[in-house]
Image (cartoon, rainbow, N blue to C red; front, side, top):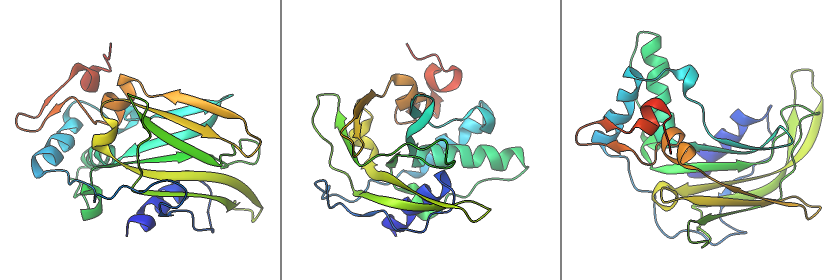
Length: 219
């Protein structure tokens, strides 16, 4: 279930993948803990964001290299909040599937949705604010064969990991590298952690939201 869900994330971010990528962590130490669950009160508070934000303004954080997408982060809190925004804008209401209630963040490194916009990634480490590597729940690093609507195919090295939201909310850094040995380091800021991933700034008992979430005011 979990590897399938994270693989689905990669399919959404690429152009028709055919090579499985996500496994139980093999090239990184695996977290021994099952994901915490998003409480009903927190889920309600997340869906309440539809009253103050629109789906068009609800982007998910990315890091880019030379204007090419290198790293994408998506939390299940974001999935719930934006899902209800889209449903509300269409006159409905979002019902979160059970696996969306796992309090996790999916991180994907590498992209190749166009042959002229490829970013190769072969290694990824996520560390907390103290610089200690965070053990993923799932991790995979493999070449992926992509295919566009015209039938053209190409291969891109990609990495994906799934992490406990609680391990990231205090701040985190992502180190990535390609097979040529070139490395990059990205540090998540408050706007990403709180305003986009929604890991902080929400009081589930009162549904109060921080200015970082409602106004993108994140000093």
